[in-house]
Image (cartoon, rainbow, N blue to C red; front, side, top):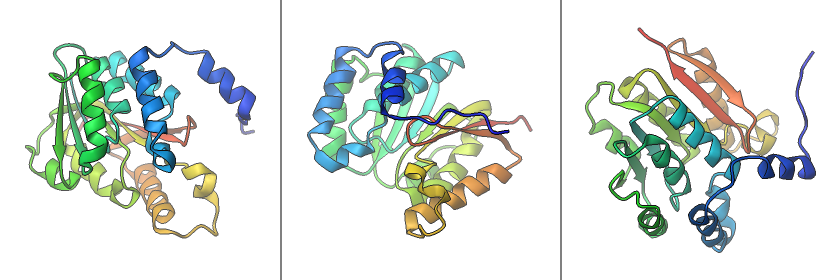
Amino acid sequence: MAKYVALNEPLAEYLLSHRTPDDEILIGLREETARLGERAVMQIAPDQGTFLNLLVSAIGARRAVEVGTFTGYSAICIARGLGRNGRLLCCDVNEEWTAVARRYWAKADLLDRIELRLGDAVDTLKSLPRAPVFDFAFIDANKPGYLAYYEEILPRLHANGLIAVDNVLWSGEIVNAEMKDDNTRALRAFNEHVAADRRVQSVIVPIADGLTLLRKLAD
């Protein structure tokens, strides 16, 4: 028998209010991003930010990569988890949104921990040594690119390193057979690929819009 709790708004608010509180920097960044209007939906949920920070800290990650930075909220959460000697590589294509990110990284005293590379993320990843260099990765960018990002990151991830992938439930539309747009089809293909991939151990966590967690298995 399936065991789960269906979320409604009061329960979702309860979850958000019963976690470690955000500081003024994260709150301010959420508020500024909200003023972008519909685009603000691209920012991760607050509880996802807490979850990413917790994961990175718990595994003792020191090197991380992020594909899809937007205004920098997830990068702050990840970089803080890496600690003073950690380094996060952020890949994005939008100079305007990442300019907001840079301002908040400065406020959070993280500029020395984060490197931003603007351009196609696949090209950026391919330019890196094809050897394990990362302990953690976060993918939250254009959905048709997910599989390519994953395949470029995996060989560059240490054994037992983690990859987190956002939006894998796609507002619940992932199981709606009538949804056949490019984004939904790409996410379905990605989810199926990961579920069958014996190089990793994976699970979909129903937090916010769905977050896949993958652990790279030792050879």
